[in-house]
Amino acid sequence: MWALFEPRSNTTRRAVFQHDLPAALAEADGVILAQVARMDQLKPEERLDPERVVADIGAAGREAFYEKDTDAIIARLKPLAREGDVVVVLSNGGFDGIHERLLREL
Image 1 (cartoon, rainbow, N blue to C red):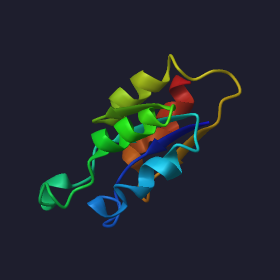
Image 2: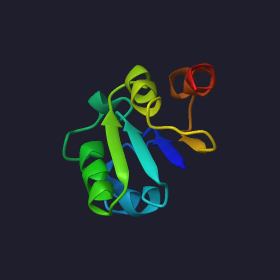
Image 3: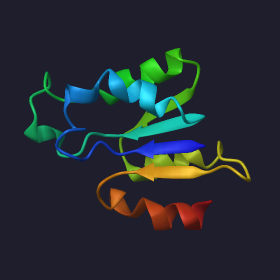
């Protein structure tokens, strides 16, 4: 199972879940985190650090990647996804049309 996570909600964009997200996402076999949405609206010290989340997931023995945009996420996932894999898209928004784009690309 691949988890694609977009930190988009007002809560997940913030560091509130900095320590909880790695454990939750590490339940997947592989994880790709997108850039924090509207990050310019938050002070750096208040913002979720997706690269740290990825490092923590990797330390737990799971594949994890940080990609800044949807094109990079799809490019990262294409060679890794195998027939029979499940791809879970986690976002409270459109995630830049990733659903349709994944169906076309995979």
